[in-house]
Image 1 (cartoon, rainbow, N blue to C red):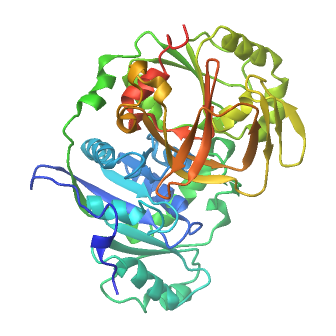
Image 2 (tube, one colour):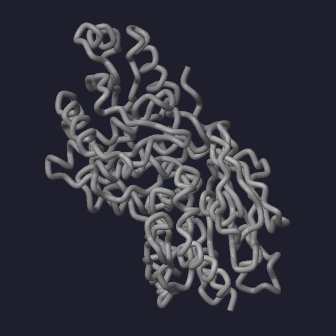
Length: 472
């Protein structure tokens, strides 16, 4: 029996006027569960159509940082998050409309299983009426392939469903077994063989970063060659995407509020988990962005604000510790009372000490008192929000409507445990469970947390966080 959509969140479809939108072929690539091969299939489709001379825009459902790096390598375009809660319904609608105006194909990689999460990939598909391609790992199944397909397609009665592709299937006989049982109403797009060349390696936070794979382009080219033998070589059906009326709070970024502000962003293999939307937000607000490496650069560039995103500092802890001149520059920057914003791995870099998974201890910056230890067990995961009343524009009235004016959305995902020797300034709240989440610390001129901020979720607040005069 199909689920009654009326009982589910985000079931409302985007409102529009008939014939007023922009048409573009689009597909959501989803699966019954994580590990089915969504990223590989999405990247393969993107690379295949890019090689045909088409502009392909790829999105990622949910807050993941690593898959978008692979997808960007495949498509040659920036990959933004689509999440009806984190980004918001209107935020997603605006991103899709812009992509439809500029692209020949829109691909959206789902998150976890098709119906997992609140909101889920299925919620996004229904909200924007985008057909779903089911990726089913069929290496260890035959006729059950049809049952899984039937479940994906019919569990939600209003779900637009394009069909399925069988992943990790090598022989024609296997293809015959899984395809002949499918009801005629479900399109079978073909198969992707089990191929070690196109298998993307993984580690504890997900796939290995694209920039760490020396043969990533060869892998993507090989994966794309398999798409040519499937029905996905043709463009999918067109979907109509609609514009969003601008809102005054969103328009604040057009006023060049950060003009004259030079933001230093540490970006290398140790620190690379940053939303593409955050970069776009800061650029649109007029900031000058300067990138550097805490691993390879001897000195910190000149700037007004230091932004240290998350990443894998534990994998590069020795190089980080041994880059003495860079560490000295960051300490001098902090001593000058200029703002520092640090997220997750960036916060670990600010601590006194970091212990990796082998138990080896490394000295870090020592700007936030405390230590962190890597562990094999996942420590925290989930979307969350936090109120930051200390950043209120009028600090004499911080209690008024803080849920609107001072609330930031984001997420956390980490395998470390930090013992910070400070009284937390705030604590995040998980969505949708409302469980207590991560601590947020304001220490001198430093704002740090395990939470990754999604800056466009509150443009006005984000501009205050990146105000270079904040501590002057």
